[in-house]
Image: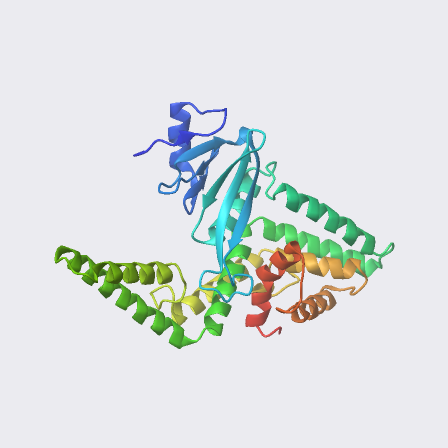
Length: 335
């Protein structure tokens, strides 16, 4: 280790335990999940701090939205954070570049340490209230077919829960594919041209500083602004952001899911829709008496998702579910 992780909280690991644990921990962006502790980043260094699991109360995702972010029209749609609560109320917030990294870390933590809560206190209260509302909508008596459908759907959800990274990648790749298909190709080339101009301006500004140029500062600032503006935006045509890469990633995610579903004969969903949120929404449709079989429940889910658009206001939990799965259906044309 070049930099030994610094202890957070009131509990520490021995030097030997720490060295072994940080070396074997699973990396998720700048953070890591070890057997003994959770490793958190500083502003500049990855896995700079560690927290033994015994001191952690809850770990959850927080998303800061920029202006235009909720409409997905801004250049920077969101900034994801991992928030860790420990030692009776203290918090540590870690910034990530990709929201999917936070989701994968939380999924791994749910498997490794299910006793740690993975939602904020406010979200926990809202979820409890939502569950009470849904419980009131459940029919007092369900038919035998409905009960059998619920059993099979819950078994399918438990099967997916054993490999949560597959569902996460299926959702993320579908969202990326949808965003790529919806964006105009000209935007990417304009972004590349502006970035190139910014780089040239930055180099000229730095050169002008050595020549006592009056315009050096302006060229430098413009160059820096252009580079910072587009470096974090997924609009530049790169080796990872082109049609072949984006479509290939979505196809690979579906193929990986299809291979995994081979271990569950009669899985109630095609691989392109195999996500726990879809199964949960199908269960709700059956419990509310809107469907009896899985095929009917899937059609109800499709109709509900079709009805949700930018003009419909929903609660945060509903929004999170829709964001996770709607791209799956849009890419397939709701077939």
